[in-house]
Amino acid sequence: MSRDVVIEAVGVGKVFANFRRPADHVKQLLRGGRRRYCEEFWALRGVDLEVLRGETLGVVGRNGAGKSTLLQLICGTLAASSGRVQVRGRVAAMLELGAGFNRELTGRENVYLNAMILGLSEAQIAERFAAIADFAGIGAYMEQPVKHYSSGMQARLGFAVCAHVDADILVIDEILGVGDAAFQQRCMRYLQQFRRHGTVLLVSHDTAAIARLCDRVLWLDAGQVHAIGPTKEICHRYHVALAAAAIDGPTDFAVGGRLGSHPSRPVLVRGEEPSVGGTSDADGFSFDPNAVGPAVGGASIEEASIRALQCQRAAAMSGGEQVELRVVCRVEAASSRPIVAFALRDRLRQVLFGDNTYLSHRGERPVVRRGATFVARFRFRLPYLPSGVYALEAMLFDADRPGERLMCRYEDANFLRIESSHISHGLVNIAMRAIEIQVGGADETAGDGVGRVHFG
Image (cartoon, rainbow, N blue to C red):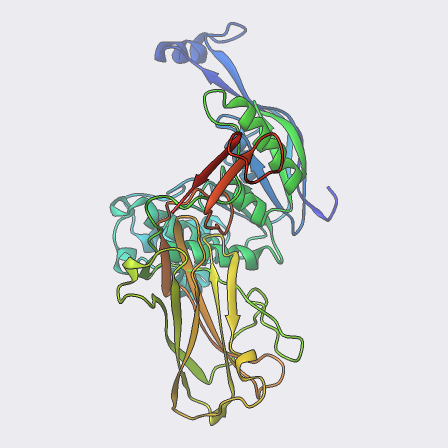
């Protein structure tokens, strides 16, 4: 195996024995020989695969295509029936909810058990336990038996262990959609950091997550490699194949949206996640929310919230209404010339939009003294977004500090919930006011042959 290839599969196949009756299983064990009392099912056959160090590979395919079986062979929880699999490096796997947990043991005991299986010593686990518990965020349940956990709590605990075992390869099977919004943001942030140095295998039916995270995609069909290649190309071919197979369902797709009879109702929910965006300025300050380094301290953000200007209740907001985003900051350093920025992120931590105060005080910036509190306000029209929960992120920079000027960051604390009546297949929607089809010429005054539909 090449030094840059961390996972290699050559002619890999996996067969399972299907017995019609329990007695047939006993007969096979006692009187097997050449006679078969079972039917063979090949979950995988003839799979060749190479995954490079630092690569993120997505695996797609319909149910029963062999995706999970392939991951189990790579993780070593299954043995191949034919061919060989070689893996270089420590593997941390999230194959299913609660995989590897002893339901009778407490969360703490399962942390030690699973981390030891993944190669950490007891001393290393004790050193990292506080970080694991903080990442999982299940509080006092850490001392309760896992059998009392919800599926989301099991996912939190399992991902927290995987995130702290210094793995070289992270294997994830349909686990990104579990947990609440804040936990999903935490997981996506960890994955983005892990991808900088580690290798990721991701199985998911969520092609948006595949497109966002993966460098290449493997498409499995009926246990065999149907295609492998660049993410955009393979995802497009996979979508076309799914549409062609959906005989009883719609095969068309739409771009944009229509304003229906019920307006969007964004609800601000504390403890859920919002989304981010940013602007840049060539004269000195450049804001990229995905490239901001660690905070240097000297200040804190006490609140970041968004509300509709037309009413007091966030639940009354509709898509397209005027809103105000308010960021309350407190400066602890001797003096500061602050720049406040914000971003709104979706559940995959993609930045949807954002802005900052740099251009509003481009000449004479306000000076804030030690211990002072100030408020930054942004007023804008709320975009039309697909239904979901979006994470609001705020940052405070000091214009006087050279180099890295981030003082503090506010994240995973406030979220915007959108319940939209718009049809949308993109990141951001539009308010469609009218749709028209004209037949027989470009004369807009023609009465016949023109179909118009108006919304709102």
